[in-house]
Image (cartoon, rainbow, N blue to C red; front, top):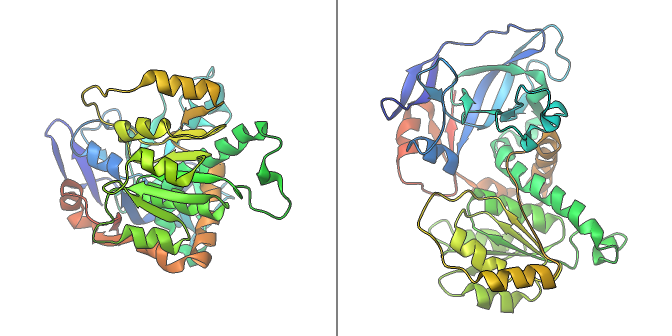
Length: 370
């Protein structure tokens, strides 16, 4: 069958013939892949910054944001059935009995670092025609979300982050979020750094949760991200017209910053504008660049005197996938046009290598498999 793969030894990305997998275990599920999203991680893998093939393979089939249809199920499978639309999880647990997170099904918190990730590290990904995987990694999607369900995995980033924020903010027992009948973020202000897919999906999630949300990014560009953000009822501030200090002064006390740029300088400048009792979430992974000059005294002073908290988040668990699917349903009902505008192109599988090695265009590019 056809697959898109990176070949590290040759420093190439191309369409390859890959063995079609078969159901070999009673809990195996065979999937016909429908769509695979392209993200910054994929683009970094095809420039050989990281990414590793499975042991014994010369290449890595790429792709981790996906949507598939179940075509065959093993004898013991109960979670899905043929015909179901599913989004498979990305990370697989490490093999060590001493890793409590992995043994508890929370490989997103793996402590050994010896996990595998489909399409990224040590396991083939989803940019191919068929995949076989265990049913425990399947998440069923309602048929009505067929055209947007490929956004599930990038939305899980925000789902996991916001779930951690709610746990942290339980410390504020007097919080206005406790008001009966109000969404949990009511009365709080959030800033989203970045207007890529992860940032825009994060803005949707935060706005849906009741936060007064502002997206801070570069100029709106040809796809009118500013207009898209404003259609959600959120604000948009362009970096070319407002500094971060001006942004903070304009908003007032910032309760939450959701970073989705991977730009460390911008992120740490924004950290200086975080409000009292605020939480700052890092989701981006910057490439290695030169050192950045920071006012570390100011940052440390604010963290201590304003009871602030900073954390990073990576990957996601089943709860985040299920939450993302539910919220995509909410978004589709509340903002149907805006949600569908996030996917700005669909490219046939044979043209995927060119897509992956070209300059990004639009918001979210998707590879269509059939």
